Image 1: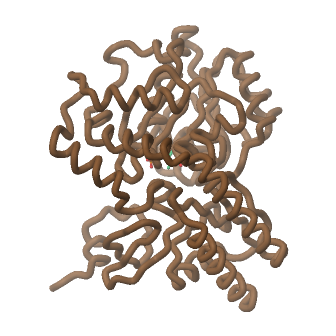
Image 2: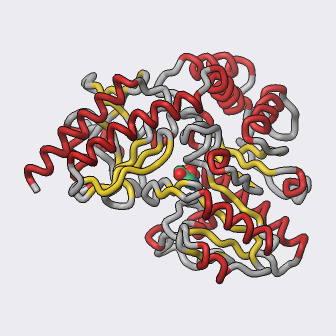
Image 3: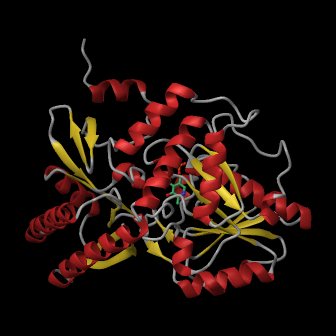
Amino acid sequence: MNLTVQEKTEKYYMPSFSRTDLVLERGEGCYVYDQSGEAYLDVLAGIAVNALGYAHPVVIKAITEQSQKLMHTSNLFYSKIQADLVEKLANVTGFDKVFLCNSGAEANEGAIKLARKYGHQLSPQKYKIITAVHSFHGRTLTTLTATGQTKYQQGFEPLPAGFAYVEFGDISALEQLIDSEVCAVMLEVIQGEGGVNVATQEYLKKVQELCARHQALLIFDEVQTGVCRTGEWFAYQGVGVKPDIMTLAKALGAGFPIGAFVADDKIANAFKAGDHGSTFGGNQLACAVALAVLNYMQVEQMPQQVREKGQYLQEALTNLQSKYPAYIKDVRGKGLLIGLQLNLDGKLFVKKCLQKHLIINNTADNVIRIAPPLIISKAEIDKLVQIINEVLQEMIKEA
Ligand SMILES: *Cc1c(COP(=O)(O)O)cnc(C)c1O
């Protein structure tokens, strides 16, 4: 018996995802194509990963050329491509040292280990980590514990010890909780999965002051906000609050898996040889792709492009909001990470967009998240806004 792609996947893949019925076959620019060749405008971009869209020549060239030379050795040897990437990353992030890994969760896991190790040097009791409610930091046991949402934790207890949570944006809550046993406060500059919640500059500055007062490190999880997504190389630069440790992943390889965490020497030197490692982390193929992506973004002045396009999109959405104030409660975000808080069923909205060949997603129930490829054109933004408008009109009529 011949199984469909959907049936075969459900038969053999562990039941951990709820998937859309679509079977995707290839992509180009901001479009993906299904098995029958139907085109879809994709403003989810592999969950804020495909920063250069699909099949970008820069990415293809890097993969092709490096794969013919060396894909993987191990970190028991040096290689030029890895040296070049960590130099470039130190440059664009503004930090002294880099550690390379393969995903966002791994980057956060490494950042937490570094903070713990640094804290231990001050006192064995300095191990607590404070994170925010509605945060998202990954799915390993430690990072799902860092994630301030019980739905990701239930059934996996006992969870690693030493984590506590505060309301995002509530400085007095943090002031009450933080003490000499805290080694780090870990936050997203904009909560991505939690509903595109933007931290104010004032809040983050005060968090930094509190951390300094208690000798706690400030960790920014920029897995989603980093690498030009918000119209800056990194979102911390937009608020002028430099963390002690920063993590990145998603857009870094523009679709090729790679993550990293960065810190200045004073912190990074808490790691000694053997304290942390990764077999695949820093492999030459991933390094070649990330280096090509960063170089391309630099040449194209991607932060400025994203600021302009983001402003154009936000203006269009704000116009829609003034047309339907009862149904669009909020338009928020920065650069090309935008949340549209609806007073309508978010799931149904996403489904109706898909019927009109727009891939978009909802997070935190009724927040529509827009995180398109950073190379999206104004014409594609116009099309996106037009489809959103049509779906809104339909749903309002049915409401
Ligand atoms: C996606 C995400 C992660 C997890 O990244 P994975 O690559 O799925 O492990 C962690 N933090 C933030 C802010 C994210 O958006």
